[in-house]
Length: 127
Image (cartoon, rainbow, N blue to C red; front, side, top):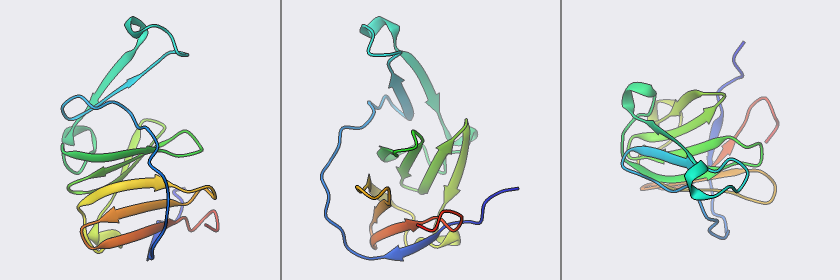
């Protein structure tokens, strides 16, 4: 059973930029296998046919639970357990062009779009 879809709340926040994953073309992520030398990196490339709303990625944030939030020119994507779940204007964002993402110290995901700043509210977690 899927959790209830999140709601979005428009507000303002302050935060610092944290280093993200290295991008290669579409959504090519490089992930070390325990800080090993560069030759031990694994490369995965995801595209629209894999579940991204757009191939153009604007930002990536790894949340405290280890999963990825991906901001694209076509919406927000949560990548969890090998599955993409996309959010757009149809699910509550007032603009699907997601330019920036960050997680604050309380584990809240902040989404910067062309039409403002939003906070992700997970219906099943109370945040």
